[in-house]
Length: 428
Image 1 (cartoon, rainbow, N blue to C red):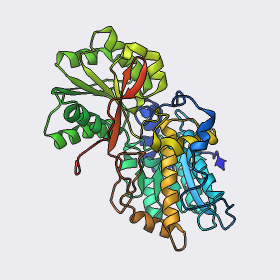
Image 2: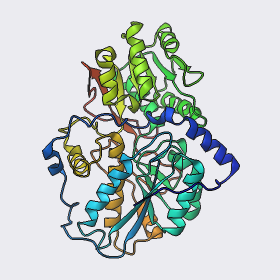
Image 3: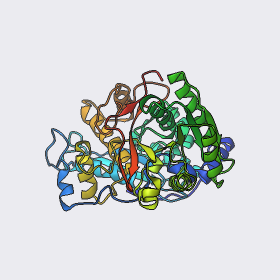
């Protein structure tokens, strides 16, 4: 069930002003969060749908007919940038659960609300779900600004959210929200760590290619986090003055600073600009590492051999690997339900699977209080789709996914640069 509500007055003038500014420019960051939706992960085959399990473990086909368990989702389905695969993937998980007996006979009623990339709408739909729909949990949300708008409200209402794709910094600094994805900020720290500790590059540099209110400081803090973890310092740090600036001068400054490896951010369009500028200016002796936004079929197709050697991180098990055992159920379920095979879809599937397994582990009444209590005990959820155990627990903030695999562009195609997960050290 999907609703498209009208706008209503926001929470406070300060919060609305902040999130409106983010909404106006967040499309620039969007690609830094997760893979863009270009391509279908190596092509869809007729037999792919058979890879998905018919029912979750220990369940058998039987339609759930009891009193529904209300679960909500707030995602940007319309607006400046959209995430439709995330709630669609989550719905596929819950639909399968419902035809396999549900949660002790109770089906999941999954309500998806569109915040339209608008802060006042995001505030309205949260209240609709929490106060009218009486949801016990939000699952698989993916929005440009929903965390920033609603985190305080969720804390007050004592309701939790297993976020499918965390975008803004508040997604990773709330006691009631825990994203399944690595996210752009930890992604920067991981990429710097990969460059210095795995690739053993000496002169590590960082270039920020966007200017989003409230986000720049979080990215700068991510670089500081790497410095504390390694005891090393950036050789050079550059940043665009505005989002439309040419990247070439910054790349040339990195060369003049004798950078061995440079970590960049920005959306998919920036990946194309970087790849072309590197080729045109003969900068191929430097290792260029982008965030997950660079890992798209479109970047590979557009750059082809011009982007040779460009690297990027993948927050989940790389979605382009059609033969990956950890992805077989995900891939099959997505194909069966017509959901594009993207990293966005991985986030929705994983969030819903964690919620499903949490509900199935409960033995008493399922309500908002009992679900929150169960999540408070969730300190180590293991899955091969991510390199770090997922957790919710009782911490004041949550950023459990501290791992990535890295990809490299070779002969116009993304291939694995690392077979194993790169994980930040404990405590970093």
